[in-house]
Image (cartoon, rainbow, N blue to C red; front, top):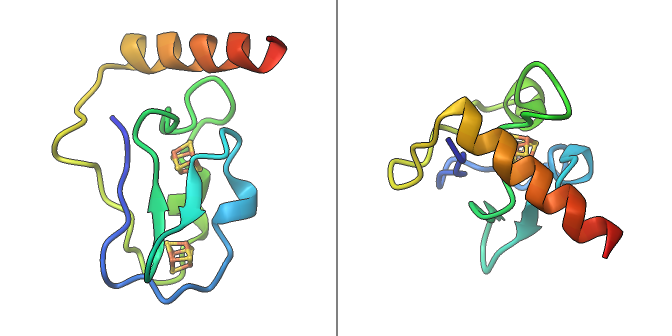
Length: 85
Ligand code: SF4
Ligand code: SF4
């Protein structure tokens, strides 16, 4: 699953630097997550780092990006390969 950030985000800046995939960025008003880059931290950590750190718990699963762990690992490998390129 990719995750998403809701309107409850207070722009505290904690999550963005901790994302191993650089999937979090500042949007027009609040931080946002690129679902094509979010692996729910699969391949890097045992749990989503942004969820663990967010002080207001505003990072649920993106309803349009339900993915299995196998799919998430494939995304991780694709992203890792892109970094080499
Ligand atoms: Fe980044 Fe992991 Fe959060 Fe996805 S779950 S946005 S990969 S820190
Ligand atoms: Fe927003 Fe939570 Fe990220 Fe802080 S940690 S910027 S409140 S999503």
